Image (tube, rainbow, N blue to C red; front, side, top):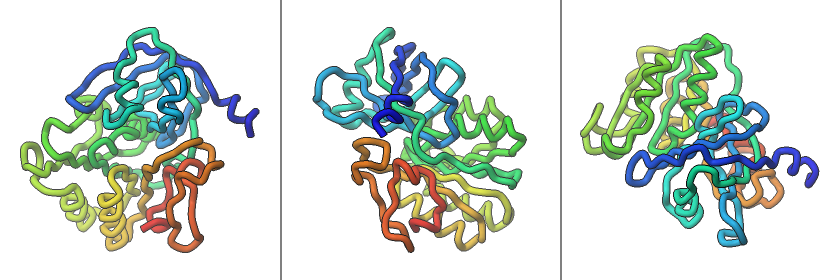
Length: 257
């Protein structure tokens, strides 16, 4: 396992570390890794010593040969240190890891994002559009200032439906409301969802009622990213527990909710 781990460990160089809002940043790195599948993640370490001790997991926001981007929220010691990275700084990357969004036969892909759950979807949208799918994004945030990368999604030709909790942009309320209305009229497609657990649970319920297949990207605290430490297990509805890092982060919604 150690040999396998070292195979996926790479040193990247910081190209740009851009502050997008008061709490969201976009880190662009240069280096080479195996092409990821949409929805996979990397373990990131960008500080010397052992404080923090562990690497941090991040969804792959965007990828092209020689370049990797990570969209992150500054909310703890690790991400605060990450926000201090300047151009030329070295970053240790382990990945790509985990199970991404599956290949599907349906032409219609419905992405559902809540908050920083938007992170894996730009690369996901790009890849599925490239393969001939039509992509619709349902995106919920607290306020209009919390939306990220809307222009990039529009440039890809993604259809957008937006909601905010305060009504400052799009429809006021939660993203599951327009999603439910949409599915009542368009009973087709496959849903990929990423966001807070309560949102994922609500999405799973909506899709269950609509008879639409859904896959959710789970978030969990991770220590190793390889399924060794048992730090990221979540309860499987029928089969005990699953490792988010190795059996996920993307799993069928009915396995968890």
